[in-house]
Image (cartoon, rainbow, N blue to C red; front, side, top):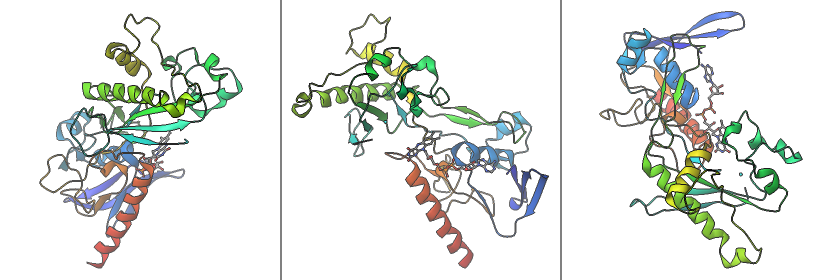
Length: 309
Ligand SMILES: Cc1cc2nc3c(=O)[nH]c(=O)nc-3n(C[C@H](O)[C@H](O)[C@H](O)COP(=O)(O)OP(=O)(O)OC[C@H]3O[C@@H](n4cnc5c(N)ncnc54)[C@H](O)[C@@H]3O)c2cc1C
């Protein structure tokens, strides 16, 4: 799908490309954009729906000035599933947990360019995580029996953005995740690491002669458990867990940060909905696939209700 075609603020068709070339289908009722948190904003912006200044910069006429692509949220983790813990660091007053110890993986999580058989593990694939983020002690560690605790920040305050690179639908959009921009995110991850250490120091774990392996920064002059060293650890080792959301945020019609209304209809445009993880107002407390499926189910119901009205 290249773009939706809009006339007088009403969707009239969809342009797309197949192996046989460019095609156009007429839309009689409505079009659904469901490209995910990166590509849905791209399709909307290519269609003239997005921040006016950015569209002007790219040379696209703005049909609806909406904060498309803003509010990009990614869960961030420092380091895969036998158990899960949701914890509150207490850094902020909130009913919701802000850290998830996602994975109580029954092996050492590979964090280096390992050459053993376990290097086949997907997480050690440079396609997923660039090698420069790895330490080089993992080969030794992976020969030992162990487990990994994956500290995951659930509600990052650092907000990113998806923008167009050009008018060409085949040009990948610019994704600026803005990781760890807000100091709260670093502090919360540090508290998560300290919590993980406390888990290894419990009576239950003592029976396994458990030893916590902190990823020491080789050149750091700071004490291993100081905030300063742990901030270096977080900033060096943190990686995404690939849960982008919220770039076509759902909100009330008067909400200036919203792109779609609670029925998932693009504000100010007739006959256009976005139905995917991009509509989440905020990233969920946990993994995003099941909520994205739920959004799809709810979206399907909303379309059916709309057609009965
Ligand atoms: C590597 C990785 C690992 C993950 N692991 C987990 C996990 O363990 N647990 C979990 O809960 N979540 C996980 N997620 C997140 C989860 O996959 C997403 O939250 C979920 O798939 C979002 O659903 P969506 O419908 O919004 O977008 P998507 O699933 O991305 O669907 C968008 C679809 O639109 C298509 N598309 C995009 N642009 C266009 C276009 N222009 N024209 C036509 N089609 C287009 C794409 O090919 C894709 O099929 C992971 C994500 C990644 C990338």
